[in-house]
Amino acid sequence: GAGVSQSPRYKVTKRGQDVALRCDPISGHVSLYWYRQALGQGPEFLTYFNYEAQQDKSGLPNDRFSAERPEGSISTLTIQRTEQRDSAMYRCASSPWEETQYFGPGTRLLVL
Amino acid sequence: SQQGEEDPQALSIQEGENATMNCSYKTSINNLQWYRQNSGRGLVHLILIRSNEREKHSGRLRVTLDTSKKSSSLLITASRAADTASYFCATYAGGTSYGKLTFGQGTILTVHP
Image (tube, rainbow over the protein chains, first blue to last red):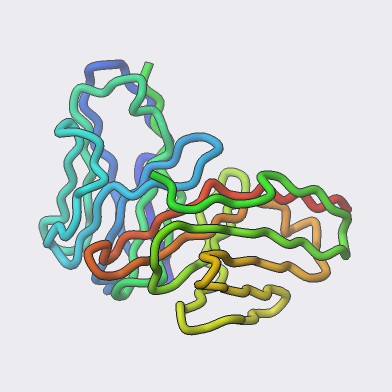
């Protein structure tokens, strides 16, 4: 079946603009996760949802970052007033419940 | 913040040789997982070992876990050029960290044909 999909795959934006990154999880997966990965590093946790409820947002770096999953399926990670330090790969994953997480291809964000 | 440290940071071997990567972590875990990341692609789950397990096998992969030393190793036997990738360990603590995976910095494996 279809895996986790993310869009856009690449996003170039100017500093100060808002961006919205979309994640479409595997159908039926309860849990959805967002991670950020800098070049040469492992992914770092941002936030996660069970169904539509945001269970943990402790990894969001500041209040410019927010995420939602209003119907318990597709999720959007929004970064407001982007800064150059926000440039990274943003990865989404889903799982039937916790434990094994299935990752999407990621969205590479470049803030100029 | 990264929980684990992986060692070595980079490993270069010939096809057919075995590759061993190590991962150390800091806090108690519920399970430890290994992922592979090919250039330009997403993370692929390889294997999960629970805290009450010591060794697990999957095809050419062998994972060990020593909770007393807070360390794990991933062995890839009879490596192939297609195994060239970055390998990450990730810990799942459970409890108040429910749902969260904490990744190491990864080992870059290059397998020469």
